[in-house]
Image 1 (cartoon, protein in one colour):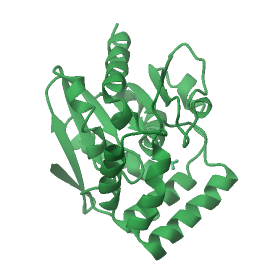
Image 2 (cartoon, protein in one colour; image 1 turned 30 degrees about the vertical axis):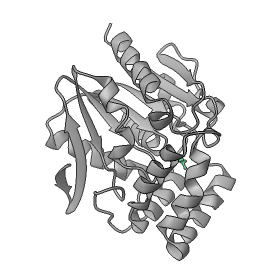
Image 3 (cartoon, helix red, strand yellow; image 1 turned 60 degrees about the vertical axis):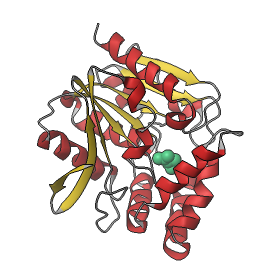
Image 4 (tube, protein in one colour; image 1 turned 135 degrees about the horizontal axis):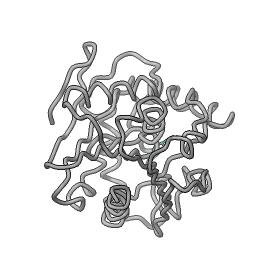
Length: 260
Ligand code: MLT
């Protein structure tokens, strides 16, 4: 892992390959490691950059609460530091919320972007309440208990146990302060559904047919001509682990069609 320092906080990232830049943003209680099975399938011809977002993985976890825009600003800091002018951006779940913030505020830095098991909807009132419960579980019971409660719901029923184990292992490395800060950031995120048809960029929307966290109808919020939709059968919320080859093909096909 390499790192840059943004306002005193380190942002760690992996940076592999050469060519058009693909930037991959992980989800809540994940890390850049979430993409470990996807990156090899993306193959040659791409430079793939995957940060550990603020409060996650090996990056610093400054005091929260965070905001999605702040997490997006960290990503711009990283792109600037690496002198990357434009990239294809794909965000998984919370990473998708950050992708939408970038699309709204920095669309000139993007060639296209994708939401992987994510949504432009804000949290419902019920979800906002659950975020507060998440914060109290993280603070009172610890990150291990919180992640143990979180992980089974991320996968489709019948997913291989070793995949759940890997997601737990990554989740346990989330600093509690980072997990709490990010939960509060997601709680306050705005409705960004309108960005998808209005952004003037190719947009990829990917849903897992068995996603119990972000069901397909919450991902597919636009029928606009700039939108490509894909459903991954057999996958829950974690196609990066459940169907990495299929997800990589979808991403590569999207980039090829966006480049036409
Ligand atoms: C994630 O995987 O990033 C989370 O499920 C997103 C969320 O809780 O909204």
